[in-house]
Length: 258
Image (tube, rainbow, N blue to C red; front, side, top):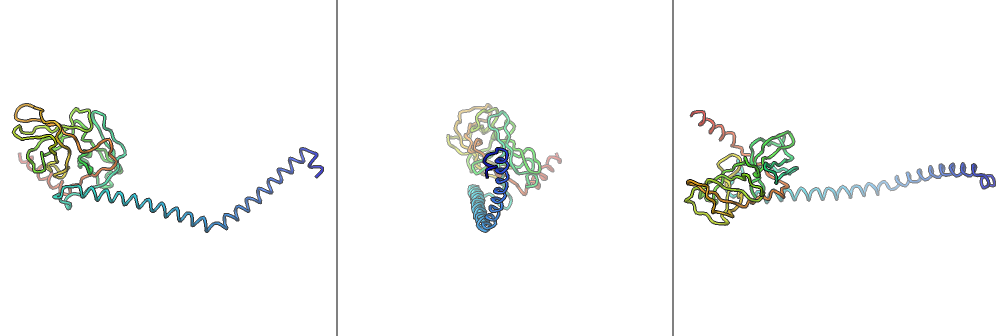
C-alpha cells in the first residue's frame, strides 16, 4: 500500500488493473442478470409485438372501412361483377403545373394497365399513363390533354366533354359542347357518362358554378367546381373494366369495316 500510495506509476498501474478486474466482474454480473431476466424481457417483447399487431390491424381495418365506404358511395346501378376497384396510395402528385401527373404504388404486378380510369370516393382523378411492375403514373384530370365524357344530371339530360384546359386552378374545370337548348342552373351536378371503358356511369365529378359561357354555334360551355380535392389525394381507386377488351375489339371492328 505504501508503494502504491507514494508512487504515481505504481498507483496508475494498480488502478488500471483494478478497472479491468472490476469491469470484467460487472460484465459477468450483467450477463447473469440478463439471463435471469430473460423471461421478463421476452414477455415485454411479446407485449410490444401484440401492441404493434393491434395498431397494424387497426390500420388495416380503417383501410377496409374506407374501401367499404367507397363502394357504398358508388352509384347503386354499377355492375360490381363487371368492375373491379384496385386500391393504391399516392406517392407523388402535382397540381400547379400546366400538365399534372400522379404516381401511385401499384403497377403491372397488381393488374394495372395503361388507360385505366382512376377515381376516389369523391370523384374522378384521371387515367393511367405509364406502368412499371410496382408503380404507375396517372395523367391527372388537371392536364390539358385529358377529356372525359360526362352527362348533365344523373338522368343524362345532355352530354358534354369535361376538360381542364389551360386552367391554373386545381378545383375548377369546364364542360364543353353542351347543346344550347339544354336548361342549366347553378349547382347542377355533373356525372360520368359511362360511354368509355375508363369510368362507370354515374360517378359524380362536380357541379355547375357558371352557366353564361357561350362557345359559339349550337353549343355552350359551363364552368364546374370539381368534387375531387387534388391537393389532398392520399388513396385512389383504379377502375378495371373486365369487359373493356371485348367492347374495344368490337368497336375497332366497326372502324376496320369502314
